[in-house]
Amino acid sequence: MRVLVIEDDLAIGKALLKGFTEAGYQCDWMQDGEAGVVAARSQQADAIVLDQMLPKLSGLELLREIRTAGVMTPVILLTAMGSVQDRIVGLNTGADDYIPKPFEFAELLARLNAVVRRSSVRPIPVLTVNDLTLDLTTRRVARAEGDVDLTPIEFSLLELLMRYSGQVVTRKMLCEHVWGFNWDGTTNVIEVHVNRLRGKLDQDRQDSIIKTIRGRGYSIAADENPIPEKTTP
Image 1: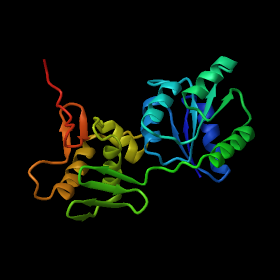
Image 2 (image 1 turned 30 degrees about the vertical axis):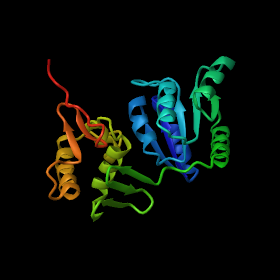
Image 3 (image 1 turned 120 degrees about the vertical axis):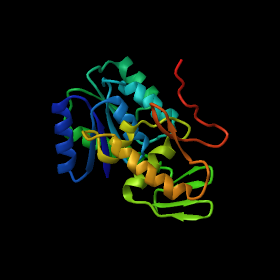
Image 4 (image 1 turned 180 degrees about the horizontal axis):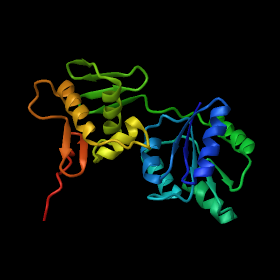
């Protein structure tokens, strides 16, 4: 099982990472709401442990965004605000369970296993934009005339772009998706990989399916909904 922890408290985050790893689970740890949204929308986790009070984007805002986007991964909400009304708001927003802080890890683990057992939802196995398809199960990428052979990095970049079809994906988001939240390298390396990805996807086509949004990042959009470039007033 793969667990996504979204928690900004270093002590709690480290403890959860250690606890889940020792329990035999794969565990990814994000430390703010924006990075958490990217990780949650990838739908690679079987369950999410989500802190309610996060920097950049609160736990409830994150929860609303991923549920609106159709991500139904089970979520356990952690918070220091444990009133009945707080629990009602959290559950109504889309949480599957709610544990107030402080908590016992054994109880969290038991509740996590319970919500996963109750969930029959599986991630969408195939992403499609125009004539481009990406199969998450077989890791097959195809465009109209046939298969496209991608490296693992190119596949990961394309996956995020297709999940955010019609939206701008920043270079920072792509770096964090491929190399993790603690990426401290230059984002210029993304341009190299995106250019290689374009070459494989576009071949002899005049227009690239991956658009550069000047000063913002990249986007893949359906033909009828192109992303406008940002203009300077």
